[in-house]
Image (tube, rainbow, N blue to C red; front, side):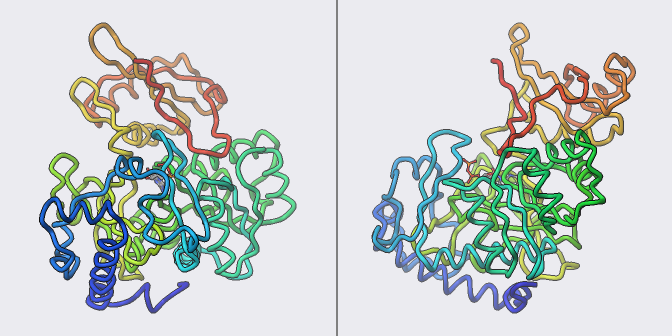
Length: 427
Ligand code: ADP
């Protein structure tokens, strides 16, 4: 562990730390950010009413639209001359939001990423192939800072130019790679295409995040790159990557949220009421330590559940993998649908690869979904039996009848280093 004292802090002490940090933050935000003063004043809430995280539910949510309304700097809680860096979200869902960091914030960013990489299997002295995009996106520089802090040698490859990535993997012999899961799929296919045996590479660990993914992709990437792949989660509004991380020895049990810095809640998507541990809803975060761009109860739109794991090495809470963003959720003939649900079904078919798209279009007055999915090489795309089995399994598991289009290998667009759109909405 990178920071054993904190990562294994008894829960009671963790709560005490969170309470102290939250009360100080609320007092400060009320004085420095007009948006928060107004949020409190309109409902007659005083900063003195917030004495512990048990009072959090009294505070209204902060939503992405609030950040856009205060674009670019009005949410900053520090004067601009104290800001060390400015980033923006990738803008997947519209105008990007702008976030700022003081020097102390960058230290926190480095700390949580260092913890995350260690949790994924990294050790000082290892080499990291960083294929997250460098630039306004928090991924590249965020991972870079944390890896440096941990004592790794960073190879700042950034995204794209797949041939060059392969050369670096072969010649520079990195021990770990960080990229989006869809790009890891692209790389693992490129190895095969170029007749490179993954066993000849030194890479042992892959840290994948920035978009939703499931066990289907884990299997493909672990086999294709000959690595142990874990999940990293984060968003610019909270800090960037490193809000949570899966342990390489506890795969499939969720990702630790570094809750000494980021306090999580899961709330009902419609009512906003907090949900019990284990129930699925919208993930909401309060940043406990950030100086330049703190947020109270930020509505991430990401759907998951959180729970403590009594069998884990650390005391911090874990989050399940993200099903999708609530604004990415399709409502088809009254049924809620995330593309990851279809991905899980595809995983059950050894003759299908987890390279797929959901095509949504109007069929008469109804909306219809067709799953375009690639078969593994040697499988017949005309196989009626395979099509029918897939249609049936999807119907049983998702509750919708979907069309199925089996595609030849390499016929669906690949990720070029960024986030891949799994849904083609033609409506
Ligand atoms: P944008 O919201 O414009 O894409 P970010 O680059 O800040 O900006 O992306 C953060 C979002 O990316 C998260 O809110 C979440 O939807 C998604 N994301 C990040 N990491 C993961 C992950 N490990 N699993 C699923 N989704 C993720």
